[in-house]
Amino acid sequence: MTGDVESRLAGVGEPPARSRGPFAEFYSSGKNPYESIPAAAYRQPIHRIKSIFNPLTLVSDPDAVRRVLVENVANYPKNAFERQFFSAMFGAGLLGLDGPLWRVHRKVMAPAFDPRSVAAYSQAMADSAAAFAERWASRPDGAALDIAEEMKRLTLEVICRTMFSDEADRLIDIAGDAMRISQSALDFTVLDFLPVIGPRRMRAKEDGLHAQFAAMDSAIYGMIEARRGNLTAAPRDLLTRLIEAEDPESGVGLSAEEIRDEVMTIFMAGHETTAVTLTWVWYALSRRPEIATRLVDELEGVLGGRPPTHADLAALPYLRAVVEETMRLYPAAPGISVRDCLADDVLAGQPIKAGAQILISPWVLHRHESLWERPLDFDPTRFLPGGAESRPRFAYLPFGAGPRVCIGGNLAMTEASLILAVLAPRFRLALADGARVKLRAVITLYPEDGLPMILGRRLRSDAGTASGASLNSAA
Image (cartoon, rainbow, N blue to C red; front, side, top):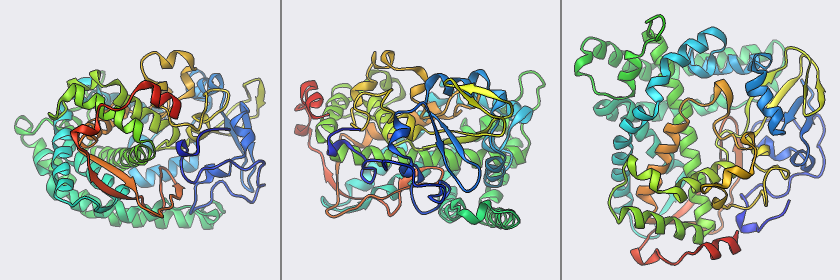
């Protein structure tokens, strides 16, 4: 695997030449377990990950990925442990459900995330980003920031305003406290997979999560009750759309408890993943200033200094390409949930026995040598119009695929793009001297000790110097 060191994600380096054995636990905490996957996995269609528990079969062949996630999806349900975990985190939300009830929820919720609805949320997103930009503008050049925390705060504000409109302010601090505390529940060690001990630890995590979210639960239930009492006066935000949502066949909507659970799912999954994607965008742009310049050129050419709107996004292909390339190398969710194989099957020409546990990892898939040219280089041009024609459909899965593809993928792309369109023309960020970026992957991929960066103003004269030739030669 080759590539300019300045194009690589810090902390990745070369994968180990060979497997570290069954005691190099993939389920260990405090690190990015995907970094322990050996180099051979980035060349093979199927790779077996050894474990003192059930071994994992890592699938990286696009046709095999299609079979698991689409063509034979009924044979590959989500792993029971993961369903239990997500149910503890989100209750009866989409991530914790499976089977007929999941299908009902998915169908009921779909209209709240369709393109027209996402466009309606866009103004709140852009307004939140603009207010955030003014806070940055009040800070001096050279101010030190933890960009990971900054992006968490911004995306929390965005999702609160998108979901709760004028009632967002009182939810931001409550939700922020709950989110920070709940991170401890995401840590898993070998003990969590042991008989007797593991179930007890899971129950303790569930009890802790319920206590941490009690204040937020109370506020959400209060808003649901108030809005149901006068829906005609309710703001047209995401919460109202969930309250109004009905199964088109049965006419049945979501209960207050189900709405609460879906709200928590959107909060935890959507807020965190967008925050870490933006964190890695800033990191990538700081290491590739010529790419940042080309991005600013495009933004200035289309927007001319005015705030972005949803309609502008179609005219900003390089902006989208930067976000997509970031999600390729820095996938917010580096592993799609483990799937259990119910009946014998064949994947990429290899027999898969019933009972096997299947892992599809965007972390590996997006760096696979058979699928990507210069896989470790950060090169947004591969996502410009026409670029997708040269690669298999299932080589790139930032939001998963198949029936369980992320319902909020379009919402997340819109949010990340609008935030970047507001901030990138005004600010540049440089990695702080001596900063070491250590990756951690639990559900999301984030910098373990934060990402210290230095804030600077971007002058209008900074734009207009990039060219396609300089980008290609630097990639």
